[in-house]
Image (tube, rainbow, N blue to C red; front, side):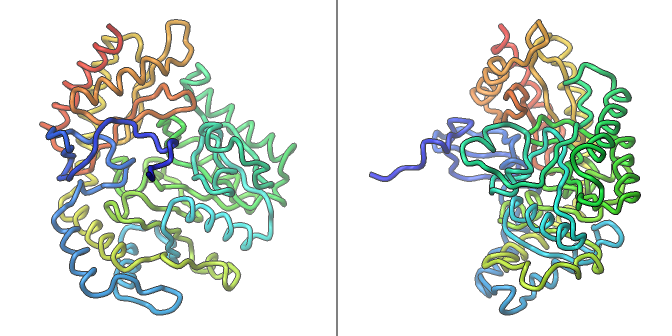
Length: 417
């Protein structure tokens, strides 16, 4: 008898039969509010009719047009369509399947373009599970443990996680930038440093937003030293934070942008964007892949971008995120076990902390499981697993936000009672 690996453990007991909008329907006959969105993937909701229609039409026309063998029209349309939403100057694109692949493509481009070996990452960042991407990941040891040695040439700098340090944001930011300067003097000389790669909001690391002073400080230092600034927008991009790209909150310009997750509403597609002159410096043959830029995924991505624009989903993410955050803060105010509520747009989290200030993963998991019993699907994150995150599809409505908050309040009551 064959079975799934025991290490593919599900966060909820649901066996999904079908999905529609922000709901999943289980084989148990129940309807669940899905505030996981496939870890931020189903940006337009489950099975949006326009995305389904685009994929169905493409399946009947061309499923696989391998993009280093032939070009296909969905890929060409997507390249043109992304030009409407990408930051100015990022006009050259490479596509892959997963976030990890895109991260490695960005890292490879940075090293080849600069001729420098080292990559700086922020403490708490998550960039993937493949060897190089895991070498860049510090959100938790489970990603790195047991298959070392990892890739050399990675240096780690602090992220301004004010709640973790017990400081105000200004102090945490000043510390983080000071330590980055110290790193360039003690660990990775600027002449050896190709890039710094960072998430605008830590994802698996606990849903901790960066801030303007920090990211602009990194931008200034990158410009001064000829270091590339790579923004990992795999989870924060495509409207998730109430801006199309998460870095737009901080008025900072990336040299390379990484995208995936919500780009194709559930179809595997990722990519990097860079200025043409920078992309030109990649070595011939260094970019490719059998399934990258798949025709069906590209068709779904074009439909996704159209839906996001036509239905005003970026603005909806901002408005619904504000409503959700206010409700989460109300729940937290009644429960001392929740030490912090944070995030941007529809990327929000509640951190559970014990009375002595230490992380409390036990209560967090109890709350997450109790929410599933109520009919609300959530995930945990953070180094200790003590952060419960909410990432509903961008189509979520006010009644659905309010329903989720009622379920969350009941779940926290259960977990802390």
